[in-house]
Image (cartoon, rainbow, N blue to C red; front, side, top):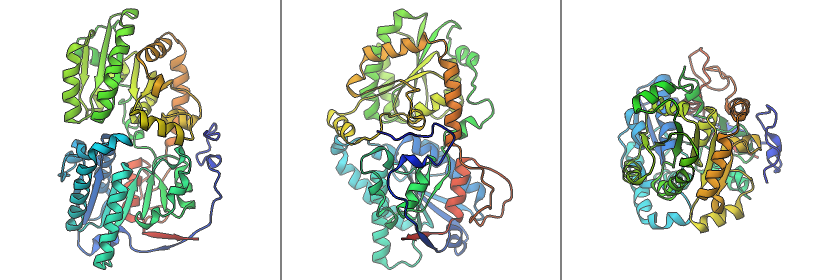
Length: 459
């Protein structure tokens, strides 16, 4: 079970972890900017393996371009959002977007081939910085092999390795112990949750809490508030319609498992609400889009599909919607911060579910619930994730007149917990020349990548 988490505004959440905090001292070497100064350009190799990582990567590239004193050259693996920032992915990101344990087995050969290709591409690119984003299975294997390659070559100017989004050590039994040895191939971890950096450091892994990337959505004026009337007009939806927003996932394996469950759920409640309409948000993944477009032809209620990649359309749809149903992931946080009542659902291979039940040490799966240690978002997981159960939870939320007021209070607490400490550009040990204030997660991450010196922590 999760220990008492942040029921006040204490962002460090020291009661989360039972391990003794060890004392370390550090030694520093050159920063990425120091390395780039010799070539007059900054070469950054990035790898993202899923849609949420693609969004993080695109913002990081934009921030690096803004802050770097040298021209930025980008290479690596990413999706459509990173490609808009100038990345030409060495292969489709979807090739490594695999989640689960047993679900991984049919893809092992392809993943091994893609891993080898990525190692070769990174080596030939000669980066000053390598940034892997989430997807720790692929990312850590890549970083380990790159470290081995540098060692074999006797390189004295190996690039710095950053991993963006700490592994969820806090969610699993024995998870903290897995941090031991991480510093052998990761120079710095960019953490998006407030309690992670302290624990990483206590296990010899340099880390910085940069804040959660989703916060950058709500910092954009009028974005999260959305324009409900515009969304209805553009899609021919009457003002009295009951709009169900559905987010079935970003990976094809998730969508093929969850969308049929969602379809049956809507069938169960469509006659209990006025003028039902479903809005399905599609991840920017061609395989996912193709599957959804074919599947909804047989649905018994009108369907509006929102293509991935448009923040404006997404939040307009959220604002227009009555209720939401989403597969566990970043979407749950986006919906929560938008104050849209939602139910979180999750199913996997039955053996994967068994491992999760056995190994997990926290009672929740959605981030707002984890942060608040409270079921502010109803969850239907594993064998409870049935159309009947989901329909019941959705109808309870629809008839709960006070749910939105409760969401406003809870969402503000979550926003505060996920916000990074106010950071001054050039403050602390970041040798940056700008003097303005900016504490957006992407800019803090970019400054850390550019100016933080490689550290090795010793007990």
